[in-house]
Length: 261
Image (cartoon, rainbow, N blue to C red; front, top):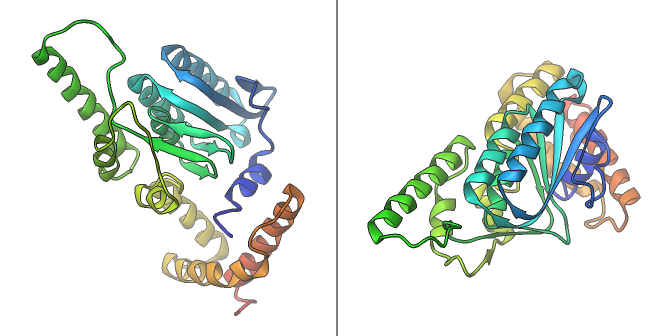
């Protein structure tokens, strides 16, 4: 339940993003959001540079970005550059909605956010060059080696396991492997960046006056206890919001020691 409500937590924390047909919405001191749809290209890199500039111009409390993903991929290097731009923003969220898909190069954009919520589909395959230019084998080999190195370097920068690259290499580019929930967890694509999570845990522990060890122990206990306070699948946004608020109340009680079970 706690993982199901991540998207609700994001909505409560940051506010509702713009509709999917809006390319980006930013300004007037509000949280910025962007939608990535269609084929990812260099033009999207330019758009994200401008969005990042607007995020930086916001007051500190609004220096955050929500990215809605619904793309079957595109240019790998452009997607990596977009992910790097997103990672430079201290609070970044990537969402793959229930009826949406993030596949191929889109996965690199998803990887760039420090907070990730996936309720739709995430698909992978082997990275490939977009060019149809005639070249010798040796030239193509050098390009393929360079692209593979760029992908692996990027995944390491995003604190994701290289086993994700290995899994990509097993799927030919004309196919898509949709990742299961277990695979999403194994590759870290549906959870927070570990460094960001560590910073967040430290901030929360400090707020409760707890040591990090005590906080993590109570956090583990809260996950066990607070899962039981709600039905397994809220049917409406309002029910989900109420469930989120109940869980937050439960977790706070566990953290401050007033709730034991």
